[in-house]
Image (cartoon, rainbow, N blue to C red; front, side, top):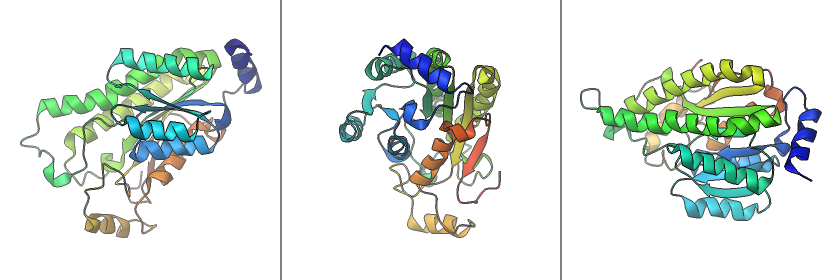
Length: 271
């Protein structure tokens, strides 16, 4: 069956753009480790075809792909490089013989959640801000634009961005990270308005400190305990719990939702 035939059949079956997860081709940036790996595995568990994008974590990405040889593909690309991202989307299309319909902008470039070691207001540099904007804003922009032709062909699309609850609760001096994620929230909402008439939704999932990822592994246990005590659920959110929310924004149940920021942190921050 040709790609055009597959696309026509899929689109005709779901005129409202609500493509089941099992029929989606998903790209998860930074999808081999930490939160990204949890999101990748969540989509795979629902039958989706998933491109596990990685920058340097080749072994981890290929391990996931090897465990799901028919439905997972590991592809290296630096999301900050538009040409590499276009190649990523092209490779996904060729491999799965259908367009990418869902993208998850998860990649986090050169950042560690070590509050005491982060630059304070009197010392942080423009270069630190620029580095975070390149990863958290330019990267998602590159991926969305590269995937748009395929989404338009399929007659629907899902864009999911990963944010932070530090917008509302800036308790640690992650100035560059939080500013870049705030810009990503703006992009999420303006792109939702721009792309909505084409059946493409754009939403954000914002977590807090997660227990546990590579990025949060250096966090003292006392900090985890303090956060847990401040939540109605009395626990720290796991990567798997946040991944569940990403699935919601990709699945047909969210077909009427766009431009939203869903906070997944056990109720610590009230949105």
